[in-house]
Length: 193
Image (cartoon, rainbow, N blue to C red; front, top):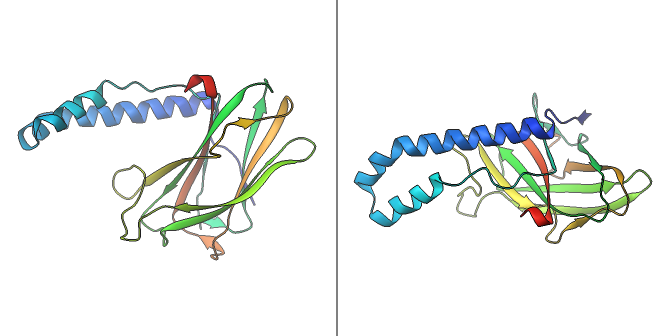
């Protein structure tokens, strides 16, 4: 099984900005209530959050939603990335969204980057989704939590112009891993951060 991205870069950016505006509107509506309850420094911090814009725009932004019976252990999540400038350094970010049916505090991922001719990068990654005390990392409201982390601690460089496939496979013992609702990949030009 293979999952394909549901949205192109522009649709993803529009959705991110829409969600950001909705969150900010909620905070604006809650501000009077919070002002009555919370101390002044927190109110100032809330006001600062309200002035934040959508931020730098990624060159690549793709989301793959996982539906049905979960993420099968043989299924690869594949992000097809077109690289036009091989001299550009990118900051890669991965976002994993889980819901309250996810049964673990962590997630093991196998991942690689394939060029048109070979494997450019390959490793496995342990992602800690929650603390040992059960406090979930990341952001979100209600049942959904999204954790964002760098693809690599250093910038990504692509040796040639062309298409690259970023592939992810879960490394958990479950045949069908429940509770992972989506995985997203964004690539920002280093100068854009």
